[in-house]
Length: 442
Image (cartoon, rainbow, N blue to C red; front, top):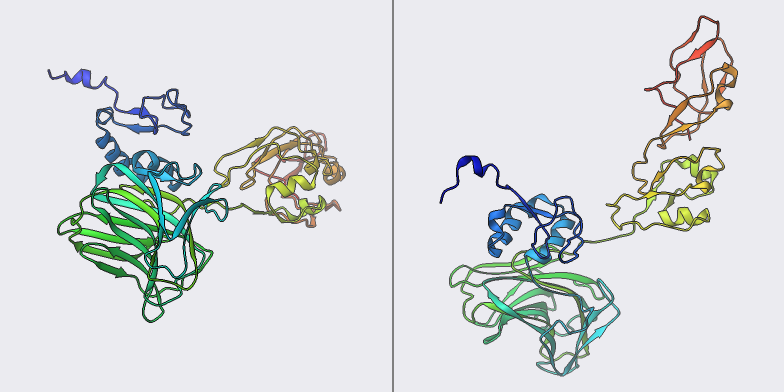
C-alpha cells in the first residue's frame, strides 16, 4: 500500500540513536537510557536504515565520519568499524590462545603506550624459528582487513638477513598468510617488511633508521582478491609499503590475527619487543589520539607578577602557588568548559577587585567581566561620578602613563581611552564612560 503524499510529510526524517546499542534516544541526550553509554551527543540517521546493520555502518562511514572531529570519529569507530580491540588491561583474556617455542609471552606494566599494561614477547638467543604469540580468532571472515598495533623494540636485529615479525593475520583453517616486521638485509640496512606466505614473497620499504625504546604505530592492510589484492603497511601514519594488483586469495579470507615475536634465523642475544593498543577493523584505523599536558603562557604578565606567579605555567601550578586546591577537573585537550564556582580570593584580593564574578577555567580567551567599583585613584581629580561599571578585558595590557590635555594636570597610572569631556548645565565636568569605551588595565 502506497502512503499518500500528505502522510509522508508527517513521518520522521531522522532518528537519534546511541552509538553503542543503536537504540533510539532523545536528540538532546548525552547518556543512553538503555545501555548507560555516555556519548556526549547521539548520532542522527535516517530511520529506514536502522533495520539493516550493514546499511547503518555504511551510512556512518560515508556520511557521519567525514563531518565529525578526529576525536569523535575515533570514538565512533569502536562501534561501526572495529572488529577487535585490546589494550591488554585484562591480560590475555581477550585473546583466543597464546603459544611459544623458545620464547615467552607475558603481560607487563612497563613500558606501556596507553593504559596500565602491555604485552612483552621475547625469544631466546641462538635459536632458529623461535616465536611467542597471542592469537585472536574472529567470528566472521573478511576480504578487506586492517590491523594496527603499537610496537616497541628492546633490541634491533643484530645479524644480516634476520628479522623480527610483530603482527600477522590469516585464516583459521589455513594458517597465517601475511605478516609484517622489521628486517635487516644482507648489507646491514634496516627496512620494514611485509611477508606473504603463499606464494612466498617479501616486500620491503626503503632503508630506515629505527630506534629502540620507541613506540611505533604499525598498521597492516590486506585485501583478498584473485587479481586486485592489496598489501599495505603504514608506520606512524606514513605508507611505507603499498603493493597492489596481487593474487592474495591463496589461503582464503581473513578471520584471525596474531601479535607476536617471530625471529628469522638465529641471533646473538635475546630479543624482546612490546605490543600495545591492538585494533582490527574493516577500514583504516590510524594512530591513537595523542594527549599532552597543556601549558598556557599568560598574556597578563603584570597581573601575575603582582601575585608572584611565573608567567609560563600550567593551571595546577597557578592555583597551588596561591594555596587553592584544584576543585575541578580539566579535560586533557581543554574541549570541555568548566566554570569555577568559587571566589578566587588569591588572584584578586590584592587588587581590591570585587568577588561577584566567575572565571572561565580554560583561560584560552578569558571572558569579559564587568566590575563595578569606584576607581577613585584615576578619576578623583576629575570629580567624576563614581557609581559606574567598567568592562575589564584580561588581555595583553602593559602599565603605562597617559596625559590628557584638557586643562587639568592629571597623570593616569593606567592607560585609559578617554571619550568626549564636557560641562553640564550645572558647570560640572561630565566624563562619558559608557560602551563602547572600555577601561583597559592590568
